[in-house]
Image (cartoon, rainbow, N blue to C red; front, side, top):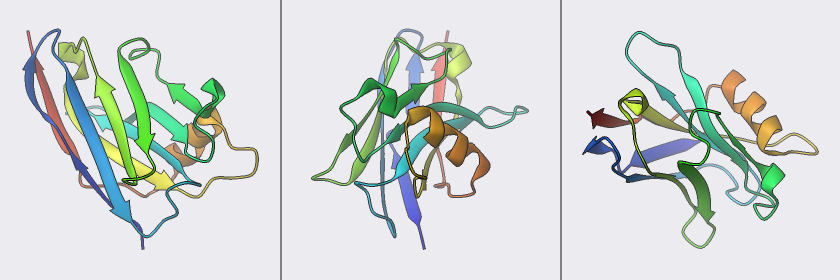
Amino acid sequence: QVQLVESGGGSVQTGGSLRLSCTGSGYTFNNQCMGWFRQAPGKEREGVATIYTGDPRADRMMWYADSVKGRFTISQDHSENTLYLQMDDLKPDDTATYYCAALPPPPFASGTVCYGVLRRGNSWGQGTQVTVSS
């Protein structure tokens, strides 16, 4: 059974930075679709950034929502089995609960493929709150 635990959320002002972390168990970290999604009050959950952990060197192994491109960076530490989301230049619209997701990859996985897998899946952590004030 997959268990995911997010941390690193908090309250910052516009323009600030936060780094979210996701650790877990019950899955093979170095061969997984993993990613970050978020949900604001009254809105549907949306993808933020996803990654195929099997080969993170290629850019195509990562996917970002247009709204966070250039500001957020997804990364991983295989030695710590930890997924990160570095969030810079935060805006009030980034306020949401952020969730980590992990599912086995299909053949020929990429960041975009993993986004599709994860958004249809049901493997989430408990979430961590990010609040950005203006």
